[in-house]
Length: 331
Image (cartoon, one colour):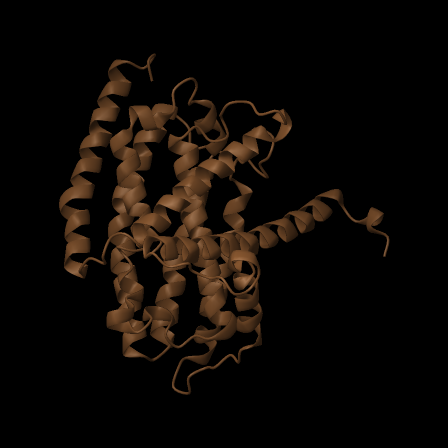
């Protein structure tokens, strides 16, 4: 087939989709390997060592194993919803890559409401978790799904309030516009409290320890994905790692200057390299936190949000609004 007769925009969309899917899988492999190795070092053990040098091929072999496993659908489950839930978790994650500004020249679309679009895509994951837990017809899965909904509804409030403080300063919802507004000072300097609140809420939004109550192994077996196996299970893992990447990407864009950094010898690519370095530095912190702090109780998790994060984020937003109104030239 002669591809020259195809519309250029269609070819661009297909190539972008292939690159995004490849990056999602590569990112999951990198984070999975990093998580196992860091967990090993924190616990004073070597971690994966058998497959490849330093176990670097372990995640690739695990992927092949999951592809070959049988997809088991419980007899009493809601078959249609049970099969749809992993797809509902995985398919939307590629859309958020459209608005991420990896550099000043590497962004698929610079939407005027890019931040709202990205947060909306990330929030679809909680719907997938609810569908998975409810359709499994398993009490542990249902408990995990209910916990996830309560947790995400609570922690989305301080997350959005902390981001709104930055939006007031930048006066735009465009991700690229927010990055360009951070010259010469990154917003983490002006908004340290908002950054801390956002990062803590991001840990809860992605169900990461110490806020991994929806998947608490000691209480709920595996939580909402207890009944899933094979590729269905792996789609939930891919979605989790990709959402972690999105949470850190938003933090880099809104607080850490996006692609800005010291120009490197290969200047044309330095912006994208700086962006990824910052993102993976934050991902390292997320993994570090998981294997350092114990899991909290569910009442502690919700009390911490409603009694501390939300009041602090409201006060921070109010002070930001007052300062922006009084000194609009400075901000």
